[in-house]
Amino acid sequence: MTGTKRDQPKVNAKTDGNRTQMTYRKIKEMMFNYDIVPGQRLIFVDFANRLGVSRTPINNALSILANEGFLDFIPNQGYRVHEITQEEASHLYEVREIIELGAIEPTIRKVSPEKLKDLERQRKLYEKSVVEQVTRGRFTLDQEFHACYVRMAENPYLTDYFREIYQRIFLRHRIEGLPVGRTREVVLEHKEIFKAISMKDVETTKKLIKHHIKAGRDYIFSAIFGQKST
Image (tube, rainbow, N blue to C red; front, side):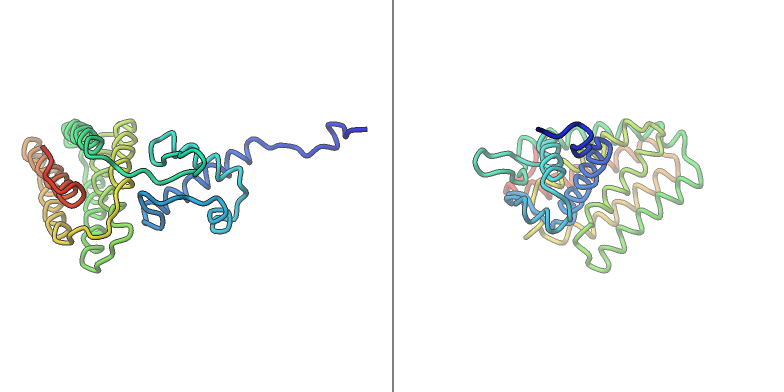
């Protein structure tokens, strides 16, 4: 006689969901830290050992990341970290610029000493990483500086969309071999953007951000695709 429902193990959907989300966050963190890199094939057993979870939450997390475009599923091979194409990068940088420039007017209209203090803290964290030559996690610090002034507009959708676009750019290309000179320029450009925001100068801030994004785009395009963006 087969077991009754009382004899069978209970499935806790909430617990499974929490494990999937935890696994998802940890894998994405590994991508940000370049513990796993674009083009790399992902092995279930390795993740199970490193994260201490079963196959199910790993499979669920990888499926979510694939649906979001961070991974590619290859039949009979499994998942690989997605590598960005030039066309894809062009579109993403365009959206990033639209979001950041669109946030500036409400950001400056709602600026406060507390918000500026937080923005300055984020700016200094990135600068410190450059001075100390910390490469892993530097993109995260850069993201947080930009996300900080987008968040100052007090529109959570803008902040969420910015983070998604930023991650779609920087989690999809390798950092090995990227020229290091650009980081010093970024520190100076961050200072100029902070100063313009603190002075509540909308037009100058927009001009500086547009230049900053283009310079970063040209840097990435030159290093990865061998040419400047158009």
